[in-house]
Length: 316
Image (tube, rainbow, N blue to C red):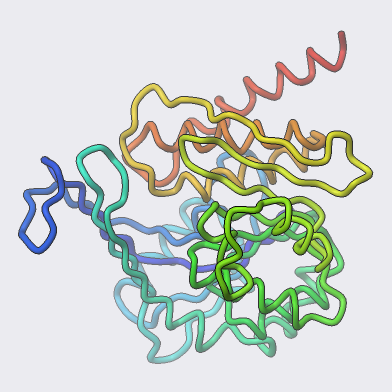
């Protein structure tokens, strides 16, 4: 069983039909659906055959009812989730250019910030600690992330989500008394700002600091440039760059980062070692970029093909 702790949003995604023009109305294709970083993790991993215990918050409104119904339909175990009385649903709005890349995004996850507290987690910690793996996103408030870092006894993976929220994880790692984090996924911009001030592009320096703070494995993605991976010194090699796997076509880049960490989690459960685990993140991202939705329904086929290659390689 995997426990996912994170946001469930109502996503409104506009994709312009021509090149994006700022400060003007752009002809677009607009879709609305159920998203959120945590929900996307849970959905990806459910597609990969995992039993998901989802810890999230739903709005006490029509959108919250729709989101809860969809999560149940997908097969998530929601008994640790809650619907705070009178709370508004979390929302995410973004505009993509006609090449599928995001031009602007806006997130309102006040629901998570107000109600997913250390006290909320404490009541659920015994059950959370019965999981094989825990994934959480940086939509959690800093005190809640500190609580998880100090009290979760099973391997954890986390995603920084955005530049400003990356700072939260940096603060949580510094404030926790005994931080333990198996994997941290972030992009190159988030990596530069994770400790509050711009650290520049010295990834080795950033990795060293993260390892000192209790992070075992660090994956820093950089879009079309690939991913920079770092591991404890006991791994050889312990730091390297991997090239991306080019998508057949770019339809929508939303959800690619969520798919990457879902691929890492799948690799962890299959005992795939570093750095080969990064291949699963790269393949999951590629598969997600090629579809309009933030989750590719054929993700299991994509990663099973890669898993067979690794098994065949190991048997040779």
